[in-house]
Image (cartoon, rainbow over all chains, first blue to last red; front, side, top):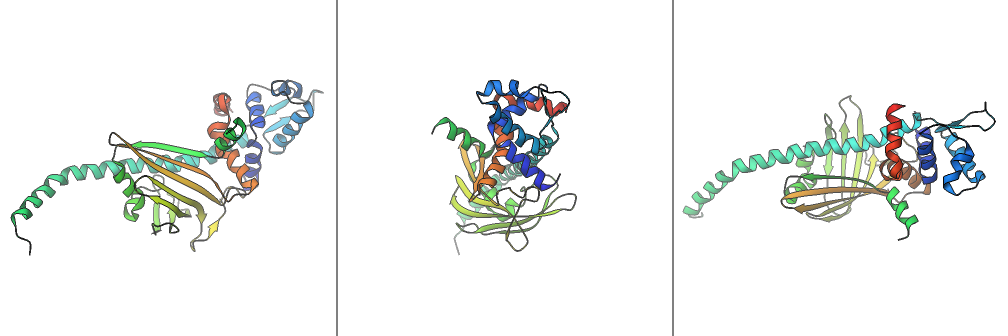
Length: 129
Length: 171
């Protein structure tokens, strides 16, 4: 997917009403009137949001029936999920490695501690040059 | 803060947190010492062929990361606030070999710079590390892009997210 597609999808998803519309559509196709009902918005206001979603390829509107049902198209959402997942993976995997590194450090510190003490004891018995 | 601003700022932050079974001085050193940082920074299988660290306010960490499939990516941190061993505030960006700031390879409208605040909190010998990112010096479009990606995936779907996640898993 090109970078422009991804940016268009991000812009469409930045609005909470549009996200709610997509969430509603995930349980099946529906009409504009039905979509508008829970939002206390006018039909033209909802239609505006639908146009943004349609341009981003997140929904399709059938031309076959007169009530033009809206359907969710999940393909761009997968791209967004992958994008965010990359960030998460970068840090989750870094944290896994950091965790291993810290454990190794602590183990070697436990092993070294008695040695350090015995060196100090020896030094205490000597005069400084 | 009213509800509208609260939800707006929630959408503009991306947060990751982890608890480590180590004292925070040790975790802090692992983050701020070049040799130690190179032992863990980056996903599994990645190497750091270049790393220049200048730890002071205004100083930078400029690095190259090579992925297991051979791709190379440059990044840059510019330190703003260094409070050992509690807090590290920096500006993070994609970069090139010369240290210039570059766009995100996947999204042209992604913020050029993000503010990253890392906190180290110690409780009972364990350290909670939290990183928060938000757009920095960003245009309206860049902020919208960031909110659309991280905000929508992290918090913005609210109670409906699980339903959508289930749908994504099926679709």
